[in-house]
Length: 226
Length: 168
Image 1 (cartoon, each protein chain N blue to C red):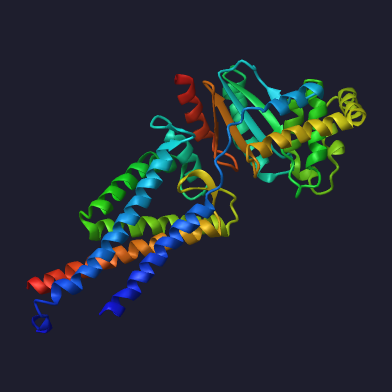
Image 2 (cartoon, rainbow over the protein chains, first blue to last red):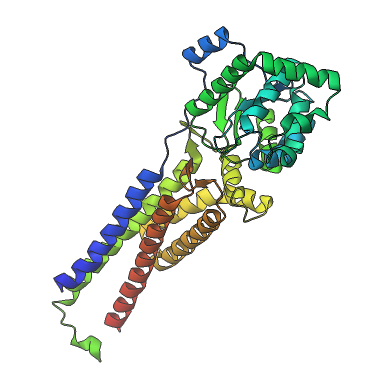
C-alpha cells in the first residue's frame, strides 16, 4: 500500500516543484524606475540631445515610446494608437509625447531612419518625419532608399537642410541615438514599441508590443481625473 | 459487495494518505492563485486597486483573442476570481467544483499562451504581473499547474466517491 501511494505522492511533488521552479525562472527582473541616472544626465549635458517630442512639455501626462522606425509593430502602434493620441491628447495639451530611439539590430535601415528623424527634430520637423517614415515604411524598408522616399513629403529646400544637417552631425546624432538605446536598456526595454507613461510623479511601463488606443484612452482619462 | 470487504481497522489508515496528498495539492494550487491575484493588484511597490485593470486589460488585449471590451471586463474581474478561487481551494470548500473550475481556467490560459506562441507574438504573459514574456517556460509552468489542478479535481472526486461507497 505504501509503495502504491508513494508514486502519486512523488508525482504531485514533482508537479509542484516544476511549477514553482519554472515560475521563478520565467519571471524577468522588475522594470527599474526610469529615473535618469546622474551618469546619463552628465553625458546628456556634454552632448547635444535631439528632442524628438510633440506637445507641451508641462502636460500632465508624458508618454515615452521606445521605437524603431523599421519595426512593423511600431508602425502599427503609430498608425492605430499614436496618431489618435496626438489628435485627442497631445494637441489639446494633455499629453507630452516623446520618442526614444531603440533601433533593433535585425532592422538594417532603422538606424539610418532614426538619424533622419533626429536631424528633422533639429528643425522642428520631427512629427512630419515620423509620419513620413511610418506611413511609407513598406516603400523604404526593403531597399533602404529612405531619403528618396521621404523627400517627396517635404519642401525640397527644407529636406536639403535636414539631409545636410544629418551628414554634418553624424557623430552627434549617432551618440544621441545610443543614449536613447542605453536609456532603454537601463529600463529593461527588450522589444519595440515599449511605452512608459509618467503622471503625478509616477512612471508605469505598459505591456510591450503596443497598446490598443481604446485602452490607452481609458487609462489617460483615469489619470486626468486624478 | 466489494465495499463490505474493507476492514474497519484498515480503512481509515489507507484513506489518510490520499487525503493528506489532496490537502497539500489544493493548498499549493490555492496559494498560487492567491499569488497570481496579488501580483495583478500590487505591483511597482504599491496597491493598484484603482488602475490595475488598465494594465491587465492591455496584457489580455495583446493576445489578440478577445475584443477590447471583453478584455477590459476580464481584466476587472479575473484577479478577484483568482483570489476567491485560491481561498476556496485552500479552505477545501466545494473542492471538486473549485478543482474543475481551476482546471478550466488553466486550460483557457494555456490555449491563449499556445496561440500567442504559435503566432510568435512577443507579448507579456500577464500571469503574475506584467514582467514575464510568453515562452516555453511560462507554458511549462502553466501546464504543470493544469496537471496539478486536474490531480486535485480527480483526487477530490475519488475521495468523495470512496466516502459515498463506504457510507453506503
